[in-house]
Length: 213
Image: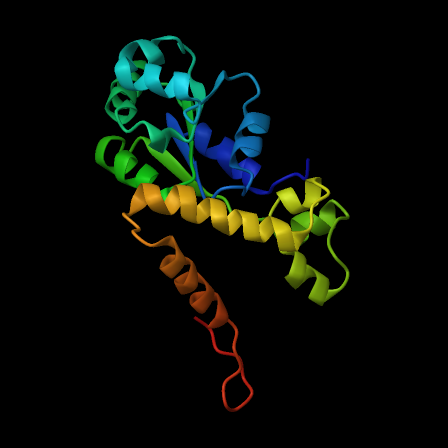
């Protein structure tokens, strides 16, 4: 595991807030980060259909299992939990009680800001930074290779082609996250829109300078 500089920020916030929320797109290493930072806490993924059904049907009893808090992964999948989390943290009054992660930033933020305002510290996790890769001696030495490979964590701990991985990532993003947020009727049109946006990034202007979007 490549150490993340965000780990210290997460631990610091857990000393001052009863809830810490780690947000960011899929495959940025949120789960790996929080499980490594809080190994003593029980871990529950709301992507698990059984756990999600339990949390939706009986959120009070679901949270009642965790007297010392827990890591709740992909918590935006069960919005009903947020109000019950508020009651738990207000009653308990301990820092670092619950650690939340969410891939859909808007879904997580909307629930947190409505019910947990003032009780939660936020960390937005990004892909590996160049200093993180350099410290782990895994940074590509060639700029073109770095740009081609990217800095998503799975590309550094799996034997997978960046070309194939990025294509699969876009497909997963469109099929799962986008459809959960908005009602996309025609995925082909949306994928074309994504390609057009990507094509506008970093193009050269008429004077040879790069544009920034």
